Length: 417
Image (cartoon, rainbow, N blue to C red; front, side, top):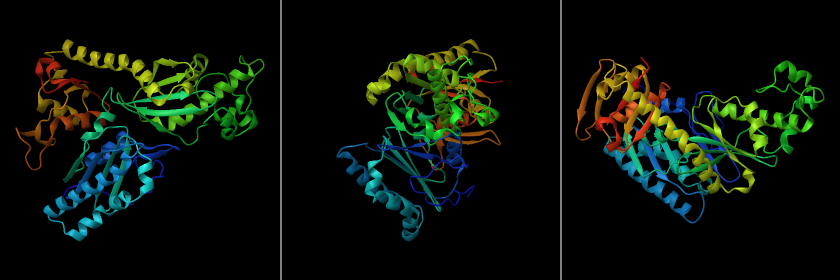
């Protein structure tokens, strides 16, 4: 049977991030969405059981359409029950396995807090759902492993970014892609400068040293910012501390992330935030002006305008590296060689063709590859496997139209060594 899915209890949707790396749920007044880490992607990719059920469906954030989302899930659960029974599980046991999702389907309040897509993963003793800014197609899988290919746009280079929009009146944080933007909210972060007092341990916490980053524990205890003679006036010191508190909250969320972060703020606030920032992937570009005046659609458009050159440059650099190293042992466009390198963690970057599958089975321990023109029982998408293993080993994955791939190859990998 292999490694089975762990016995994990059903969690309510208000749960927070757990030490195991399972996703935390970030709730705001208007939207609930889940933060998915590489650790969670790894967990789903290695879990094994005879009956791992994966369900993906599009959802709506508002309007009459949300009523249809529940019906859509109900229909998919019926299909899942039938598929489980075809695979040899009894009707009663199939019902027990699917019961957590059926309970979720019947909760009217749950459907008022959605993003663009809903993913559900079920196995004996295990249930997890994710609300994400991805426009999923309806999809059902009952296999010995979870299907996670629809999640990969969250991890491929150019597939995801974070946006911090803040002013003195409010702080908003978003996770986005090229086609979607979803609001998230952090615990332990002030929603406005007025709320900042709630996050101060001592009255003098404004008065920390004027350098970037977090104040040291010792300086926190004495809580003294030398506002007069320390190089900053009170208003700038207050703004710096405000930015440090925001950065601290973001640090808890993004500490294991590599997705770029873009700022939307007035010039002075953006400049001060850069001094406080500790996230390594904050990009130079900024959405200048008061973000409070921009609707979510306008923020998304502005963010993508800033980020598009960043993403295109990164992909072009990966392509240039591949072309420069062509013919050397540092690159490959061979499927088997790329699969081995991906499992060994040797891929620095890989470009894969969009909407292309290569079916088969790959045994990493013996470096054996069996490929098929059509999907056979027990097969998996080998390009999907390359992407997963590259991401789990901190490599970069890019997507390109098949006709634009170098030499029309199935992969274009650059190795670390």
